[in-house]
Every structure is written in structure tokens, then in C-alpha cells.
Image 1 (cartoon, chains in turn red, blue):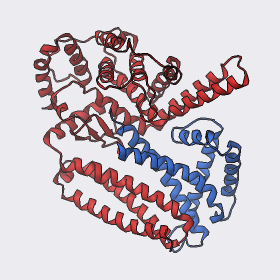
Image 2 (cartoon, helix red, strand yellow):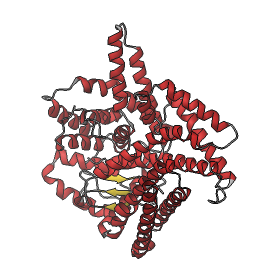
Image 3 (cartoon, each protein chain N blue to C red):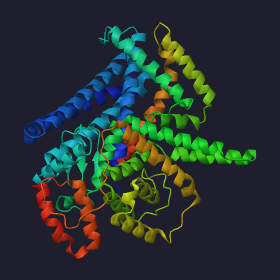
Length: 382
Length: 136
């Protein structure tokens, strides 16, 4: 037997032991049975899929065909992803789950369903880092948020960006529609090049090909998530995006091919342009715009940014995203244009209203903000 | 700013596609070696595996003709359009594969290089997802 096949045999044994350990650990966490029946079911399904991969790995070693070693290595990579999800992500979050995380998960799941993510059964929360999500199990994603997020509304619009990753992953037609829209746009640019000599034409073709390569699926996923979060929460997310652009010391116009996030200037642009005209006139949006313009006024754009993130290209992405989301007919757009800073506690208040009022209160009266938000936080998580 | 949402979403989507094709290739190889019985692979599994690969080849051919990009094949199509092997050669290989899959008879080890070439691109894509997840 070749060394490659022997290695695959050893890996089959190793992953078998790891899956057995994961299964035992899950059965030892009391809340898995009492509170997280749906998560438990999804994780067991994944374990069964991983077991099928181990069977295929054993099949390859028994066939003893060296030409199939690359297929076995592929299975090893897939099993490693299973381990990443099960042992390195869900298991620690379930093991260390606190009452604050349970409360946060209930609020997040309610908000997700109200926004049209009807398949969400529950959201497992880990208050252990920046906003992030593992959307691989769309009906029970693992949501990360900063530890202080349970005690403030500020920065919470970021959660809706994470919801958008669930939608992008689940609704493949959205990614397809945006990729197609972008492809059509870039091809139209190539056709509209006008009179160019052959070398100029070739240079233009190469530039457009680079732009097409830049907008890979991960970046489309990220920019869609900004557009969709704005669609769901209106000006609150626009402000949040501007705030993020200022807080993180990135160059706003820099095309960084190592980062799946598009430049902040492009993200802010799509958020602003994803707002309906009436929301663009709102005080939050106007103040966010002013803040952004002040921030970038001395920062030069670049020719690369103007090619990869031209207004026309970004507009095409916004339009294709909206067309795809509207076509699905299940996600209600946030339409409120005016916000009352004297909002009172009520049983029918929704989180999206609260987040907009929260931003307005912060911008109008920062000194009084903490006292203002306290009763709302208590009501939200009670 | 976290990359987890997009990276893990990509990894899952790439794994779904890779897993389906990988399993199908393995099943057809088992069949070609005359060992379906030994591994309890029914005729239905073999026929379904052949269909899985045929459907993929058809979709991939459309992607290379740039007729209706799909998010899962767009990166692969882009790699091929900008890679060293001429697009025409890829199209010829895929046409040959499509023909073989539509004809009766086993898909044998001699056909593996073409599958390998395609699957290795998907492997690279998925391995890159995984590498970035661990680097995150």
C-alpha cells in the first residue's frame, strides 16, 4: 500500500475517534437536550454526514488504487471542516453558554424571524468577540457579538449584517443574480470602450478581467450583507457602517485583495444608496453623510478604486441585490422615515425602530444616552 | 470586521458541491473496478453518480460560455478563463466527458485525469476556504 493510502487509513481512524468524542461531549451538555433540541438534531445530522465521508475514505484504502489518493485527501479536508464546525465552534459555545447569551439568542432569533428569516429556529450566541456569524446551519446559526453587546443597543445593527450572510448562503439565487448583474455590467463596459487601438483594447480587457476577479463570491457576499442590513434597518445601519469605517483604521479607498471586505468607501456608498429617498433625507442619514464626507475629504481615491468600485458598478450591485431580494417576496423592507426620540416603552416596539431611535438619541444627546437606553435594554432582554 | 460569515458560507457551499462530485467519482471508480457489490453500491447509486457528474459538466460548460453565471461556478469559470490551459482545450475536454457520461459503459481509471483536473480546482477552492477560516 502506498504511503498516501496508508495516511488515509490512519486519518479514517483519527476522525472516527474525534466524532465519537464530539458525540459524547454533546450528550454531556444538559442544555443540549433541554433547550437546544433543534441544534442537537442539526449537529447529529452533520456527524452522520462526516461518518459517510469516513466510509468513503475507508473505501479508497480498501480499493488500494493510488490514483484515488487525491479524492481521499479531499475527504480529509472536508472532515476537517466538519471538525471545525462541530468541535471548534458549536461545542465550545454550547459548553460555555451563559444566561446572557441565552437571552441575547432569544432576542436575535425573534428579530431574524420578523425580518423574514423564517427558517431560523434558534440562534446560539457567543458573547466572546466582534460581530460575526457561522451561518452553515441556517436554521440555528452561531452568532458572535462583543461581551458588552448584551448591555447596549449601540453597534447592534451589525447583527443584521450577520443575518444577511445567512440569507446569502441559503438563497443561492441571490448570489447568482448579483454575479450575473455584475458580469453583464462589466461586459457592457468592454463593449462601450469606443475607439481604441489593439494594445489599448487589450489593456482595457485585462483591467475589466481584474475587476471581475476582484468581485469574487466572498466580496459579493460581504457587500450584499451591507445592502441587506440597510434594507432591514434603514438609517441605523448606514450610521453603523460609517461609524465602523471611522473606527477601523483602514484606508477607505484601498483595494486590498487579501481582504474579503470591499473598501469601506464602497460599503458606505452602497448603504447610502440602499436607503429609499425619504430615508436618505432623515436626520440620521444626513448626519451620517456629513460625518463620512468630513472623514474622507482629505483622503484621495485611486484609479484602482474608480475601476473596481465605480458608482456604476456599485449601483449595479445594489440594483441586482434589491431585485433578487424583492423577487423572493419574503423580506419586509424597513420603511420608517421619521423617528421620535421620546419613544416610550411599549409591548409592540420592534428592535429596528429602537435601533434607529437609539442612534438619533446618541447623535442628538450623547451625554444623556446611557440613561436613556437603560430601560429599553431591560425591557428588550427581560 | 469579521470574515467568518462569508468565509464559512463559501466553505459550506464549496464543500456541498465538492462532496457530491467527489462521492460520484469514487462510486464510478468502484463500479469500473467491478467492486460495486463488495461495497454495497447499488445500480441506482451508480446511475445517480453518473447523472450528478453529467449535470455538473453541463452547468460548467454553460459557465465557460458565460451563459448564466452561478455563484458556485463563477470562481471556477474565472480561474479557467484566466488560467494557463486554453479555454478551447477545456471546452474540448468537457465535451468529451459529456459524451462519455451519456454513453453506456463504465467510466474507468483512464478517464480519471479529466475528472482530476476539474476536481483539483474545486479542491483548491475549498482548501483555500479552509485555510482562510483557520487563519481568521
